[in-house]
Image 1 (tube, rainbow, N blue to C red):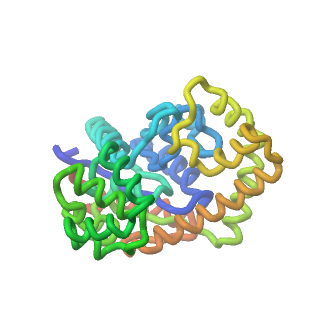
Image 2 (image 1 turned 90 degrees about the vertical axis):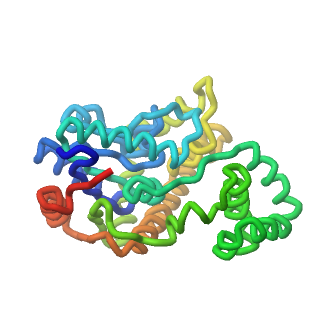
Amino acid sequence: MTDGGGRAVALVGATASGKSALAHRFAVDRGDVSILCVDAMSVYRGMDIATAKATPEERREVDYRLLDLVDPSEEFTVARFQRFAREQVRDVWRNGRAALYVGGTGLYGRAVLDNLEIPGQYPDARKEIEARAEVDLAGLYDELARLDPLAASRMEPTNARRIVRALEVTLGSGRPFSSYGEGLLSYGPARVVQVGLRCELSELDERIERRFRQWMDEGLLDEVTRLASAPAPLSRSARQAVGYRELLRHVELGEDLERCVVDAVTQSRRLARRQRSWFNRDPRIVWFDDPDEASRYLEAVLNGADGFVRE
């Protein structure tokens, strides 16, 4: 290893595409690979089954990172994940190992793989701006256009979420939101090579339902019940996890269980389509339908010059 960097590659794709199984086999075969899980929900302790988190046995075989970082009662942000990921990959490299980033959470992946500069959170400013947005969104947009015309030009005057966020950062940080760069709107040179694993949508849909039914057999409902009955309530971000939010309606509101399961499968399929769309926009990803071919390409990257990443 050279100071300031080390070997890394990424494996991306939609949920249920087979990433986790491929990554685990690859890491076991190589013996010198740590898996860094790029997932917005597997950071939560106790949310194990429907996040497809590595099992205790798998964790004994492979060095897994970025799992179980916080309690589910805590809010979690992409900026916080980025800090954790930087710390963990440095530790992986210090130990002479290679990093394999694996996940389907596109925003978290871009933040880590492209080292995006992420604006901070300014809750006091945001609270006031959100209140104003309810009564005068047009006025907020005009204010944004005056303070940061470039940011305003990149969004619709009716997009409350983006307007509020841009003003929150502009007012809270004292610098224009647009000064943080185009971020997700552009794709620069690949810092970490990304290998994509995909399969036909019909097959993906079948896998998603089969997997969710299996999770139910493995005790997912009991897991959700434990989370809902914990002394500290689930955070807003944790409650949004697909699979959990649907079953919470059964646990907390008494909705029909089968209806909630069917909805969870439907929402998982929609998530998979959103993930496919996200990754398909990135021209740098090298796609494979065959897991064995993807594995050979991962090996080639780590063994070649493109596998060395600087901080």
